[in-house]
Length: 141
Image: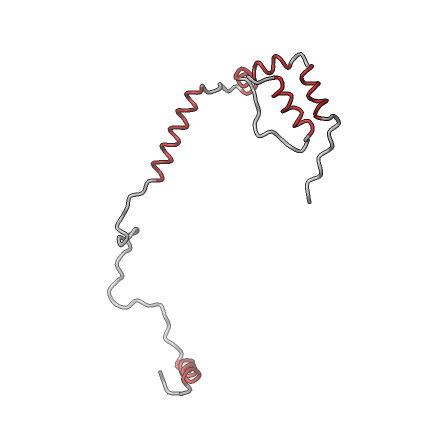
C-alpha cells in the first residue's frame, strides 16, 4: 500500500519566514545555534511547507543535550581522536599478509590409506541396460 500523500501546508514559505523572523525568541535560538536568523527562517519554512520531509539531523545545544538526555556533548578534539582511532582500526583490518598462493589456507587431514567407499555395487541388470542404450551392445561393461 503506497504511503498517503502528506497534507498541503497551510502557510506559504514567505509567511513562515516572516513569522520566524518576527518572533522574539529567534534571536536567542540563532545565538545558541550559531547561525543567522535568515538561515533559521529558511530551514523552518522549508520543513513547514514540506510536511512529508523530515530533517536529516536535529540541532540541540550542549546544555540542552545534557538536560534533556543526560548526555555530555563530546569536545571537538574527542571527536577527532575517536575518528582517527576508528580510521586506524579500519586501515589495519584491511591489510593482508601475502601468502604463497599454493599454500593451503586450511590444513586438511591426509586421506586414509586404501580405498574407502560408501558406494553400493551397481546392479548388473541396470548396468547392462545402460551399456546397451549407450553403445547398442548388450555385453557386460
